[in-house]
Amino acid sequence: MKNNYIIGLFLLVLCYSCQSSRHNNVGISNDLFKIINIKLQKDSIFIIEATKNNLMYKILSVSDSIPLNSKKIEKGKYYDLQLKRIYPQEKSMFNLGIKIVIYGNYKFKVEKKYHYSLYKAINLDGIYLISTSARRSVSAEQSIKIMR
Image 1 (cartoon, one colour):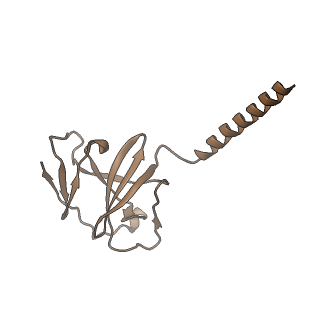
Image 2 (spheres, helix red, strand yellow; image 1 turned 90 degrees about the horizontal axis):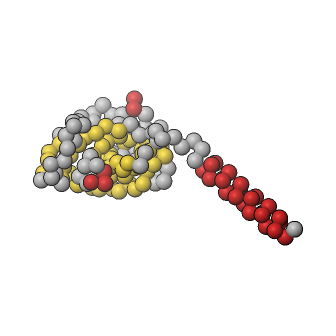
Image 3 (cartoon, one colour; image 1 turned 90 degrees about the vertical axis):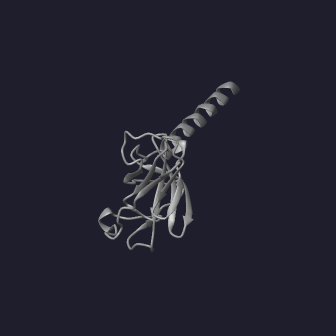
């Protein structure tokens, strides 16, 4: 009788833990990026580390001010980021010992954990999620320079 009680309690705890772990992942799509870290580099340039499908992404985001009708991104949360690769500019290009990339007036490390790539999100203004139609038209493409 005592064994049946222990087994029943064990099954109840097991069912509850399985059910709660299922609810924690509800609504999280493989198409969303999880924000791992946000760092203010210099002035108004942010380096955002994000993961998607077990890959790490290094995202550069520039901001001049807080945009209207925007939502601030937070560490540990999931977002639908629309990324554009800024380095390397061609998908077939591979790292040839390049360690530093100059984007605008700033230098950024190109690292193996980010697959030697840098990205920008067209729906981010600094650390604020915006609609792509609200994106500033003034933001001209920055040029990329490479240092070894």
